[in-house]
Amino acid sequence: LSQYMQSDLARFIPITYFLLAVVTYLFFGNVRLVILAVVNISAVLGSTMGLFRILDIPINNVTTVVPPLVMALTLTTIVHIFTHLQLSVLNSFPDKSKALGHVLNRVAVPCFLTSLTTAVGFLSLSISDLEPIRQFSFLAAAGMVFGFFFSFFLLPPLIMFFDPQKLYLHVRDEQRLTRMLKGLYFLVGSHRHKIIGISLALIAVAFFFAGQIKVENNLIEFFKK
Image (cartoon, rainbow, N blue to C red):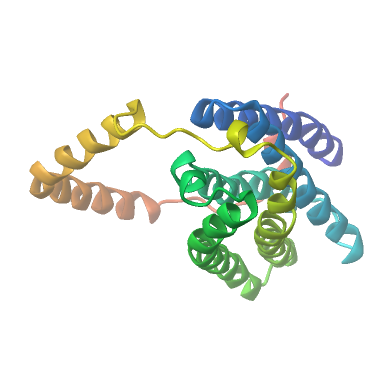
């Protein structure tokens, strides 16, 4: 099991890096932003993995989920910052430090609240009687703290190294994603009663099957023959 977990980490972390880089590029189309995102995520990942050793927590079948999870959640904060790096802000604040300060002031509170509530959600698992789940709760919550800290104390100085004209984005009113979200908004608004009914039906079915979940820990069955 230990060998499988090590091989999984060796496989999943590079794949996660690749997918996060691809998603960031597809969203923003800017290689510089991809580099900034990868560097920031690496700092968060390194700090979280270092915490494993500092707290003497092993990588087990629960804590092995922490690295890719923290990487993905850190990207959400990074994307929130990147989406506000717009040329319209740069036109209003020609000085790049003031422009970046304006961006950070706008996103600091939402990002803080998101990171805080997610960390609290992970910490709620600390009441578990199972030691691996408690370890996961502390590490995942710490990863959210690292994610917020580095996104607001490491990422901004790195952004200042780049020419803002090559970093800030020209946002068009009718981008493909904008049109898709508008269409989804009108779809939900015009069929809200049907959507509520279908959702309640799905929830009822989910509750029925949730009562039939089997609980067991025969790890031998997890291995291939």
